[in-house]
Length: 267
Image (cartoon, rainbow, N blue to C red; front, side, top):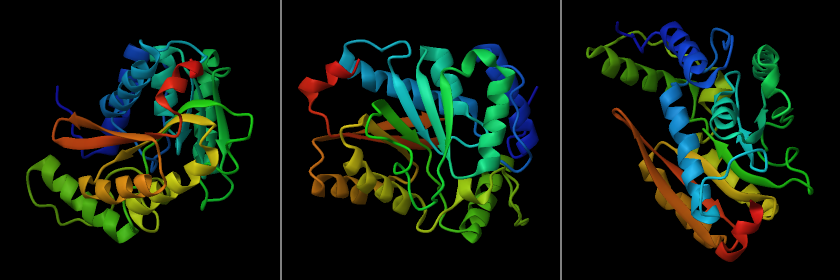
């Protein structure tokens, strides 16, 4: 059997099967047009986070004492599902799109055992990331994010064409979006670079509320500016974790304001 990964419905059905078989997530589904991420790549991010936390804790921390914040959880809710099913962690998933959160809540409704460990929050201001979400009393072990990659719809169209050329091994002239994903999931002004810079700048205000801030970084060339910003803000420590899935290469940028000797207290 083969899977045509240029067809969103095929990826969606594969995801549904993988989530049921390996994570016991029942009746997972997303509406047509929402981002349908590949499960193995998303699982990698979660497992690399587990290794990051193990460096501070001495071993991978298990259970609800670990709470993660998933920025832009989307309609698919994939990171909280995998994180809780793999390690028993609690999650708060945020999004600026109420329709996406409605579908995420529907998934939770199909899996009652998850509802007490995964909470959803609407970000009412699309210009903000952590503000309106993190309160003074909150204490997250980590935040995670798959930021909007493209700078505009036109940029997304060009990326889609390149992606389908690679998947089909031939030139594709069609310019409409063949992969799933709505505007808030795929592009924002300034693209990935602007989004992560905003995240880093906002993280200063919540430096004592989150142990590790993290984000995927798809464009390697963005790392220099991002790490320079972290240095200028006097962030005590940051790490770049390389990830690879088939031909796709990405990396996680992680930073913390908590000194090494104080991190064990978070577990």
